Length: 441
Ligand SMILES: [Zn+2]
Image 1: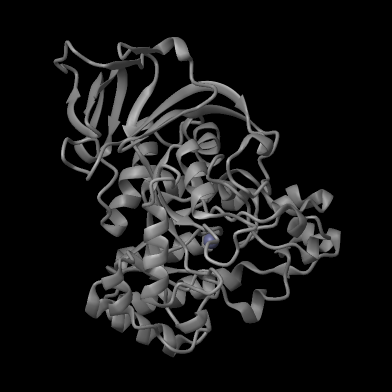
Image 2: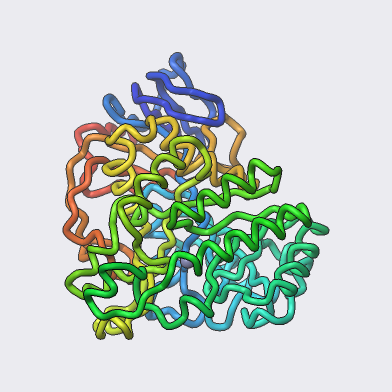
């Protein structure tokens, strides 16, 4: 089987490649890429004129909900949503039921994700930092790493006790395991439902102060600086948090950070109708935050973009605002939102956009992903993007079980139209089928 992606714009930050050319996949491996790809016997050809050919997107922050919360999402539906969103690699968070705090559960995830009927994206599990995610006793992280986790995290149950976090960092440093840090001081934010500010006061909703996030970003950056442990700050949302990260990097701490699309284009004013789809943690902030976060994305202080895909069952979000859970289902909206609100507004070039969504996150966790170089990944991981396709995001057409999204009904410009992950190929319903030719019988 030889698949030729012909005459597209090749964008690969791993080799600083931005040129018109073609890419050849032979038996699920990338074998040639560049302006001059030699081929006369392709079995199928995709005409990619006007499209981008990029390394499969990589998400460091996905909630797959399995085991224990299959009413929200499963490994299968989550990986199908990933492929539809252009992602070939996703890292699944440990706050499942039970949490991923022992090797048997890591085995369970990896077995299910690699089963023949899984959904078309690789899954890299993230282990819990503490037993039961209670924030008290650090897990046997060496055993978790041996089982296959690519990082450890307190996502979903941020460690409040600084001494516990210090012990976790000292342990992770010893075994060279990065920490994905959920930064939230619950003593300040626990009672809140949205950003603390004029809108929360007007609506009479309890607020979550920005300091709740910033205090923990600062604490974790300082612990990283003093221990040397690698940490990746999950979804920064305030200008203060990103300034802390900037300062920590300047001081030499091995810190990286990510941002979610909704924190780049939506403010707390969107909550105005008590719409639970706009309830996230950290909460949607203000336009001042967005302006500074976009700048930090452009100057490299923010290393990557992540989805924080957080699906819920419809009945769980059909409740009053204060009772609703935090988060949105977002694997299938992330790329459209980023292209529309970041790339097409000139904040990031196309190549830098691919760096933030693929090569960058792969490098942060050392994943074999984020490159189009032949042999650079175990199997071909390639996403074809139509950067100018106008479309409307409709949760009723998504693969994810979670229909909770602030972007339902939003107009986007740009979409992943085909995702290649090994032998799995996903073609979007909006892919122009006249671009596809097969000489197979
Ligand atoms: Zn999350």
